[in-house]
Length: 379
Image (cartoon, rainbow, N blue to C red; front, side, top):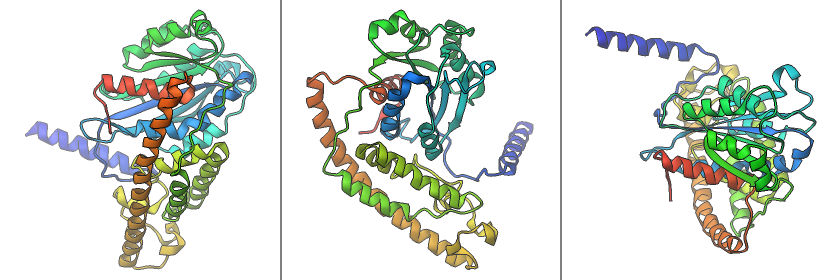
């Protein structure tokens, strides 16, 4: 009886703490397994090509992540960004900066990735790995997939933080360190990038950071992006962030459009999935996650719901929810047809010896490592 009491008391205490924090919404999402990915970018002068590849591949990577399942459940996907080797950062921080902590907010990741500039620098791989280990809220569950990707082109052993120590520490916590050397394979081996991956129990890749990403245009892209425009009209901001975050959503659409037709199509496909969740500012997602919108003050409501009855509010949200589900279903079907088209084209390119880029490196290792600990790729 005492055990039951203490368990119940602990649950109540945790729940009270959760709801007491500003901006934290009550949710009904089941607590399944996680995929956590920290990406550490060299932001020195020579890395503009690497960043261009990452911008082009961001939504493709998220789409690959979202195909993984654990015991039939969709895992929670959290991504973090760091930059290192930028001269504008302080020497006291070893020229390392966390841009985004582990988060499910994909638009925030996109905003910060597109905001990275290059300058410098002093690239200390051990220091940035150490920072990500110490600062991020890594899961303690050994069955969760936890990956660090560090990309750059200077010797891996620079700086006062010894890479062997931090990579070994990461591996002991089931956090896999994957290294992406921007240069020839053998040079990356000589400069200890291969060794870092071996100690970190991850994978070593080399890429040509100055090579443009090969995009495959398909007959389905235009239709998918047309549905994305319609999908955007189902997002209705609430609270003090609502208007700002709605504008930010459209800004990240534009960033993807500027990058390539393929990038905006991949982003549109992500937005058709559960992984793209905006409950912190979108009233439809908030209602789906369990927030009682009838409890919001009138000045927190979007203009469409101000001075409405509870029944009118619920009817409006249900209508937007139905519209969103319809557009998402259309995008999802087109995405399957698009993927089949791309796979056929990739087979042709593979026969021609197509080289890896940033995105293919990340996707390859995530799928391989995920499957090794029980994640299954959804067909």
